[in-house]
Length: 204
Image (cartoon, rainbow, N blue to C red; front, side, top):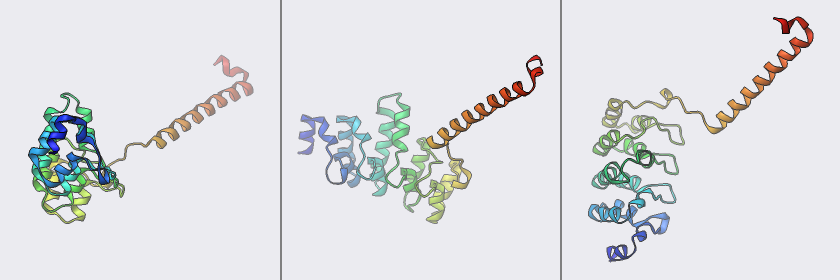
């Protein structure tokens, strides 16, 4: 019945229910891969939708240990979704939920996620992303004491949070700009003072 409605109106795939869950999220949750494929084919943009907790369909698949659903979603992003739109693919793969956990963070902390983890590290996810607690995926694996996950991440080049230099925030950039302007003003003032106190300065 759901497919009949979707065939009539493809945007129904993006209709949100309780918790912001869409039909695509629900298919990921229960692991209905064929239904998931039909929803993606009918409405490719539905893969961008998130729940009220900021979860993509990929988050849902990882949290419910539905590897086949996750694999389909990743493959869809890589091969079918607006070919050449690498930036959007990267954004969705690295989408953060309300705790700023990416799908890699979540997968790294679970003991039964080795296949999923290997899939993700090969898909171009950000190995250095930090969550709200300032932890990377490698930190999560070590904290959860999942040795196999730790090994997979280290082999892929993952780093601990202490080894990752944070990119400057907008506030940092504004402070830097202000500081530079103040420094320029001081230099101009210093030059003017030298000219006023030393007439021979201009002839140098």
